Image (tube, rainbow, N blue to C red; front, side, top):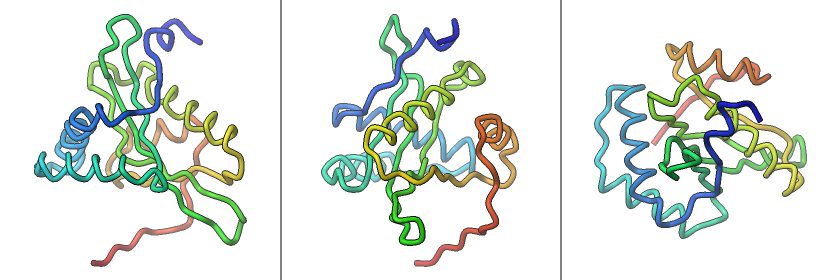
Length: 156
């Protein structure tokens, strides 16, 4: 662990973190898409996620000495019949501005990989990122992630 990374720890989120995660997601949407999401809807969505562990899990990064939350991410699962394994989808990544570029996301990602190894049957890690968010893209590339050949489509 480097000197910076020893200043925080990564843990599995708990139901008590619902308001925190909702607040981080609110900030994420505002910063990346200039969208103001409804905080109550966010809280309900995060709470519902905790009620269904089959959906995945959240991780929270905390400042080591104070225990103050400084970031989080969400993992959801996607079964791949082509690979006979699970993909861990990394979503809702948020790190407080004053903690960015200090190894918080790197440690969150390493924890994701460690949990995947413990679980077994995980064939890879995926995420999506805004096309204009080149800073995040460089972070992901620095950790060995590569852009795929897929485009994302959505319907409702």
